[in-house]
Image (cartoon, rainbow, N blue to C red; front, side, top):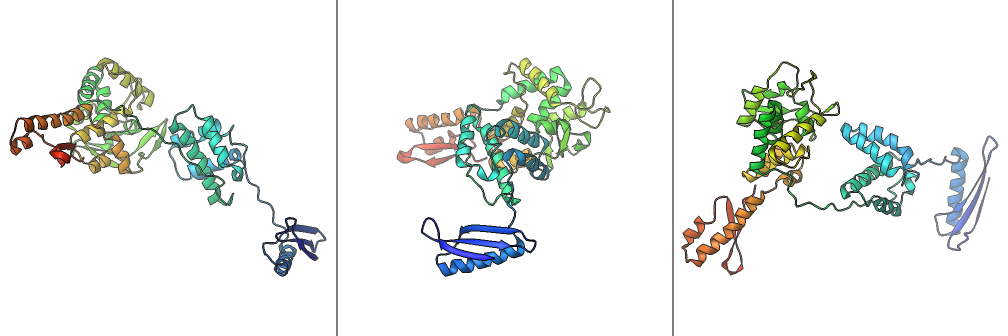
Length: 393
């Protein structure tokens, strides 16, 4: 065994050359820069390193997998182990196959750079920001899992999501549109009426409507319990991860009573003898009702849930009550559903004109108060004008 110390090639430190012969006769040599500044300290460090090599040998290099090689482990030990919804797991697999495989799939996990992330964003520029963010989140959680499982030492890059613009187009039905939809659904088929009411009067998601069982409905007590959700045959808990109780409206209670049956456990059934309805069938029912009601035919079901939350908000329900009825984990999610009707906004602005008209006519303060309308509070503005804002829901 021998240790040599000499100036490093850059002239700023000390290089050590260690030669070790193991008991089995193997010869190991290691030449590297010492992490110290003086020659004496470099020799002491080299001798300690020599002793370590003689006892333990040179540690094997850690093999870092590529993004594509790490994918199956990520799906099994992260997505499935954390019991993510089947739809989420399938989405992650598609993201890896379609968006990551041909762009960063061949990169080792510790070699994914900020430049690679930017190139990924550029390659996906024709997709919506939300879809691009889904791919970025998948890559980000893969790398964080690799750090947590000691596959790599640290995050090799920083991943920043794109800003997702919020659309101003309302995604809910106005009261008269919804009432027309319920009316034509009743004319088409009692089951279609029940389906529309479960979405618009109870706020159930599509999978929750499909999985709703007759034992979940308490007609005498006037409520139903959302316990499960179904997606393409996979039965899971609701999206919030917990049960919730929803009080029945009078017409929903009537519709549920009218549709009691002995064909199976589920509330909704099919004509072909099968107990279960599917998302495809519900979309067809929705399209028929939309067409008959003179609404835009999309087959979209989630608009009923938007309508449920928006109707509650416009009726003055509190944000917390809407959160509990809709089964949202975060209050910020509830606020995304709490749209205000354009008609309600117009009426609020009309109150300003009403107040100005009374003021111009010399009306007494009591008259001004009478013209402000119920459910509206005022804040003073410069110059004595009044601003009306909707009551906090």
